[in-house]
Amino acid sequence: MDDREVPHYFICPISLQIMKDPVIVATGITYDRESIQRWQFHGKNKSCPVTNQPLPIASEFTPNHNLRRLIEAWCASDRVVPAPSKQSSLQLKVIAINLIKNLKLQELQLESLKTLESLASENENNRICFKDVGVVRAMVTIVVSCYQNRTTVGLKEALNVLYLVGFTEDETHSVLEEYDRILNSLTWVLGFDSSTYNDTTMKPHALVLLKDLINYAKSHVLERLKLDFFKTIVVILRQRENKNLEQRIKEGLHVLLSTCTWPRNCSMMIQAGAVFELVELELGSPDKETTELIMAVLFHLCSSADGRARLLGHAAGLAMITKRMGKVSHKVDERALMIISLISKFSATDGVLQEMVRVGTVEKLCMVLQVNGRHSHPRDKAREILKRHSNVWKDSPCLDITLLTRNPSHSLLMNTNKERTRNESFLTWGK
Image (cartoon, rainbow, N blue to C red):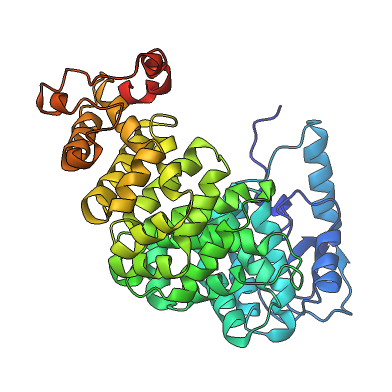
């Protein structure tokens, strides 16, 4: 293959490819005939892409025969046509800047958005170039404008460009500072009725963008979130029966986890019904990553009395937490133990303590004490919980109460039939 760089004047400023039929337009710029015709007639653009000067649709094109001969001679020297030169990025920036300007003209806005979307989808170089010329801010402006005017014209294209180009951490901070309604705008999109808006990309793209913004958001932004925000995210968790939406649910869980470190947000999540939906989601036996996210969020929600009450109010809440111990990962084990510890310390009514016996919580705690591994925290936490209510659980067949005060390396007396399966059931504790 020829290693020569393609002369920049061989490249069409629109397609960024070597021109096949170069023509000169009224502004003196040369384009590939097919590209400029598509720009004018399909895009209904009335300006030159490079100069932004008026370009009448009815204007004739002048064939650039000299340039065409040069291109043909150059290409004939090698059967493989190299990629466009690096200088084409400058031309792309000029086009992108002009397209951004056209967004302010209502009659050109939609087609300009479609052109930006098409260019962004082509390659990573185009997307990097878009960041440099302010495409991200322009798209955020469009999304917020759609929200304010309650219109979806151009919304899909703007969201797709944002999804393709993405946010850097610095961009996130500036966007959230300058466009305080962007979070409300994306939440609005997530609330679209699927029967009314049957587009399959807007809601997934809006959720990914929301997750990225929340992930980088500063505390003063997260402290201003409202109840409707969390209600919208909780609705996403209810789509658990649709296997095609598993990734969307994970994105929603990431949003909850990034915002639940503030007590005010936890309160709104609980009010929105998050505890019930998280338990129901986990009962569906999701994958390891989803379970870890669920347990992490539940731990934060159970730090409040209302959150613990909601968990205990679910018929399978305590049983689900108990059964996950030792079955998934060390992260899940620690979160489950912390949740049980919070319940045993602050919500331990007689009924709750009896339920812990009935659903096997006490038995699991006893089993935790017998597993040797590099993680001592689970054993210490299990011993703490068992000692706290030893007067109630002293008659439990799985517990020898006299051993609770002995050296941590000693085992509790367990039923011999359960002893055989102990190591298999709790492999994760020793990892």
